[in-house]
Image 1 (cartoon, rainbow, N blue to C red):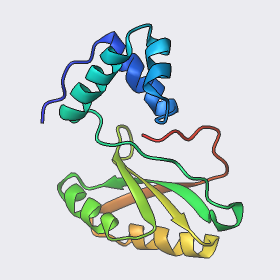
Image 2: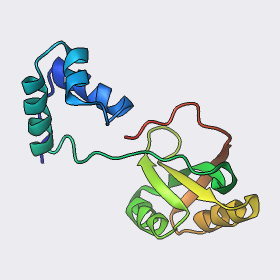
Image 3: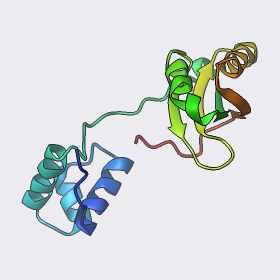
Image 4: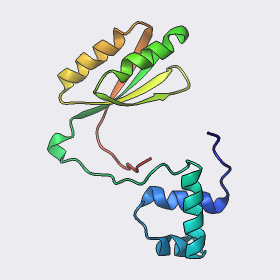
Length: 148
């Protein structure tokens, strides 16, 4: 599906929803300086076009259950990249995989219960056929975490 061109009003509407998807239509209209009916029509159009695929909530996990969060940058053989991604998606610890530019090809975001488990997962990533190199860093705290 081709993404429609967004005008400044649509972009501002999406920015407001990224910060708080629960804002009432009246508040959105006030912030945008337009009528409620305009906001309703824009939301419907963005939903129909697939730009907005849903509304969600973000929850904060109790601090004791957050686990060890890490980012693992992965360099691959170009011909093996698809197979590496496929293998990574099988790991339950990995919750996001990004294609990135630069020295590394992929970025895997993962969570484990301990540093020992993190070490084991990284070893398994390094053992995937086509993985040339990894670089890992543990995430200490979130300074901003908006839903995507």
